[in-house]
Length: 272
Image (cartoon, rainbow, N blue to C red):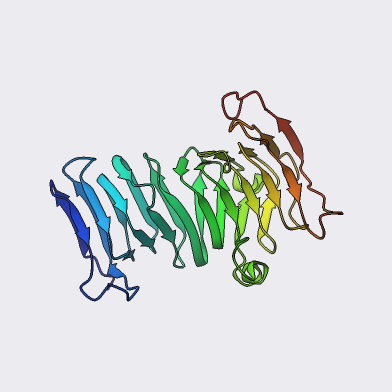
């Protein structure tokens, strides 16, 4: 039988989650279903020990102030009373297909799946901090992924041997007419981010929809190109210069290929 137990954090008091054998051991607290439903949105939850969720994650009310959540199940849902501290990380892993439903901004999101797909379905908007695909597939199925920070496909510098890691893991980004297209809207939080980054040996299939970036558009893989009806919009609303560039096979011969290009340096509303 499938386990059905749920760990629920509720009430008005601050919550700190930790294992007595955790300190220095790098362990996790493993649960099946997890619910955060504190008395108010400002009631704090701190994960001194990371939590790994095998089933359903529901964050209704409360501020997850710090820590790491490992999400393995098919469902993640947050309500308007769910808040996050700036250092919180969510690592999406496991082998199931996963759909995120959130009415609040999620923190930094890392995709690290050995199988299965994370989808952004039609009519939905997922808002996150930095969004990084280490392993697995992210598919924009007609929805909007709004990233506050950097959108990165694969690992890059300063990670050692990142090209080999990407070749093994095969981080994959899909935004095609066949899947409903969609929008990746990358916004800056500082003068150095808001970048779209595609690193060597990552995998991309993009022929429809749009990428809108406040920062740099960086491609370190000669096999990646925006084709079909896809539009790249460079906005440069962050106040620093924006660079459109690639460096493979060599900086002297690298070519960045796009289908349609929009330059929107006026600082207008994103996407306009």
